[in-house]
Amino acid sequence: MIKTILVVGASGYVGSHLVPELVNSGYKVKATGRSLKLLKKRGWGAIPNIELHELDLSKDTDLKPLLEGVDAVFFLVHGMNHGHDFIDIELGAARHFSQGLKLSNVKRVIYLGALQSDSSDSKHLLARKMTGEILRESAIPVTELRAGIVIGPGSAAFEVMRDFVYHLPIMLTPKWVKSRNSPIALHNLLHYLLELLKFEPTRHQIMDVAGPEPLTYEAQMRSLGKLMGKNIHVVPLSFLTPTMAAYWLKIITSVPTNIAKALIGGLRFDLPADGTAIQSLIPQHLLPYDEAVKEALRQETEVVRSEIWGFDPDALARWQTGYGYYPKQAGYTLKTDASAEDLWRQVQLVGGKEGYFFANSLWQIREWMDFAIGGDALKRYRRDPNTLEQGDKIDSWKVIKLVPNKFLSLLFGMKAPGLGRLEFTIEDKGDHREIDIRAWWHPEGFSGLLYWFAMMPAHLFIFRGMTYALVKRCKAKAQAGNHETI
Image 1 (cartoon, rainbow, N blue to C red):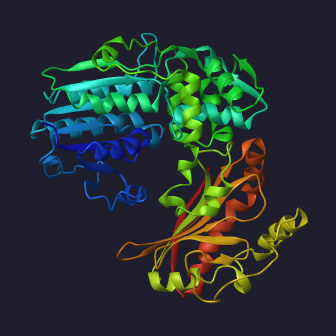
Image 2 (cartoon, rainbow, N blue to C red; image 1 turned 180 degrees about the horizontal axis):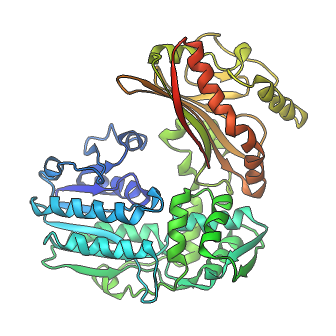
Image 3 (cartoon, rainbow, N blue to C red; image 1 turned 60 degrees about the vertical axis):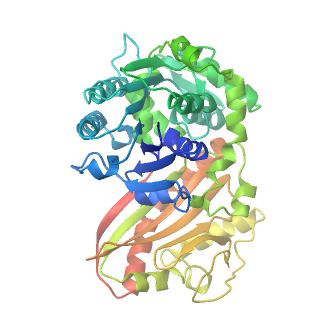
């Protein structure tokens, strides 16, 4: 009987939805992710039947303690976010885990892979196929489900199409928009995964999962547009190569760039699916594409109804259909010997008379721009000049999350096409601290993208200047940091 389940890749899209479903079904869950901090942001830390474990399978980690007492494993990891060498990282992770399985008492593994095409040379699809083969080398029964596009808020392939529909009045697309896939609703996929735990396989199985209808990507985007009240125009371009398309996606979509690039390889091919085997084993009503999209749109607010946004009611009230699910971001990380307490003391002075530590004239210009279109950014306000509390207003910002000596998140309050926040993060690394200042932006359609890229010249230097200014105010030393803009 299955009692304890290990979810490898719990911080990913499917994993983050699967873990709560497993707990609600009475299972004890060990949830893993490369970042324990990200797992904690899911709000799972206080749930009795969930254990959180940091696990980076690219490292030579002893898996025996993690696999101790585990009856079944959901293997949901991929390496797409690692960039050009993701296939080596992904297969290395699978080999490491497969070796660990050989020494365990795990009864079964359920692996979520990808639909395959006989004509595909996609590294992404090849890595998914080879991962299944490597897991089967453990000799533990592996049930591999091969899925195409999963329809739900946060699903990378779905969000790529969604961003195209929302952000572009005329969609210039690669010719692969004529390729076919078999999209499946997240609700249906989760039902398959949960119900599989009721069976006790004695051999390996590979089954496709698919929605009730194969559709081209163009047809999916047209349906998306219709449901969102947008009259879209799709213009396929034969000269738009996968490499060019990847750079095009970086501009248009908010989906993480490395994931979007990896997905391009798979989207170029027809990915047929025959879901009769699993549907015979686990019968259920498969949502048609339009119904799956409607359900996804109803769930969109989950992006702000989360620990990341501090469950803030103002953020939730301002969220609109059309905001990108994945945010754009820009920031800078700096190493320093300043104490966390000294850094926090300075961070709390943000706004009011102190301004924003660096390039205050640019911040003032932005405030005047807000005033010119009816905003109230020129109004200076702070409850206390030296300290902050949750819910405080700072000029046009609001404190939506605060952890003393560690973290401050401010909700952007000026008029602009989108929803944003500014974060200050302090991490104690023992022999040094890291201070990170970062802006996150969920664009509202094409105008939201234009706004973000109009701000980008300032983003290229302003966060770097802010981090150095903070360290200087602590009378401490600084080491060159890391600048990131997406």
